[in-house]
Length: 68
Image (tube, rainbow, N blue to C red):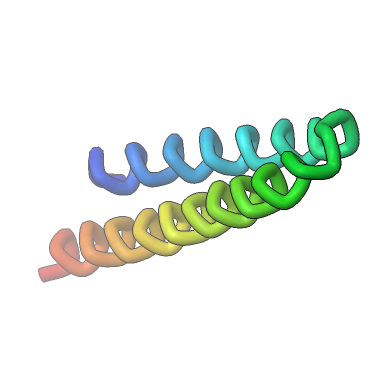
């Protein structure tokens, strides 16, 4: 697996953990801050998904390059 794929997997894990941690802290926020916390959770989850898709892309690109 290429270094870029490994980096994207680590980013995906980091964004995922941050998203879950932020999700569990939403109930402790004030009403005004809950919307911001929910939006941040969505952004972190989207970043995690994007990094995971990039990891798959880089892994497949590395495998295709190895076959050529």
